[in-house]
Length: 153
Image (cartoon, rainbow, N blue to C red; front, side, top):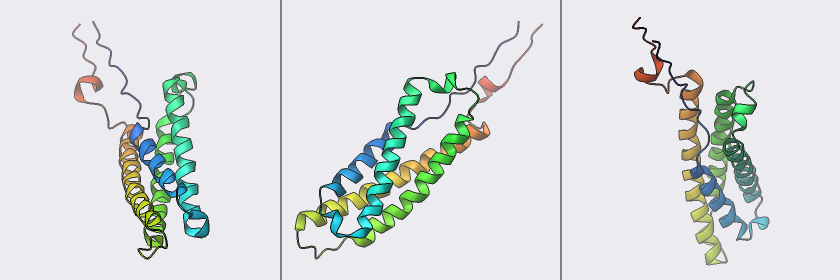
């Protein structure tokens, strides 16, 4: 009798970058961001990757990775997470550098500083997702119980 191993589960984006990314662009959108060009970049990055992450989540919930099996999903997700991490680094640095404590409206300062904090958390979440996507792409996510086949006959 041959024991058949199950393939390791695919790594797909979790909800945390979605929630954190939503907080970033919601906090920035509630300020007078249009007066500062730097926040346009932060808004673009946060909304763009929030929409793409939601689309990947919907694709995962609809199990499209099983229907489109010719697409190397671990590689696609690794590239997506690398791009999100790198661009969120730039968005975080831009957002944090543009926060001015002498803002003419105090609530703008508070929201922008909080958006910088959540941009940092989002960057870290995408970085962690990049690590796990790399492990899934390389096949390092399986353990000894699922990766060995024994034949007792």
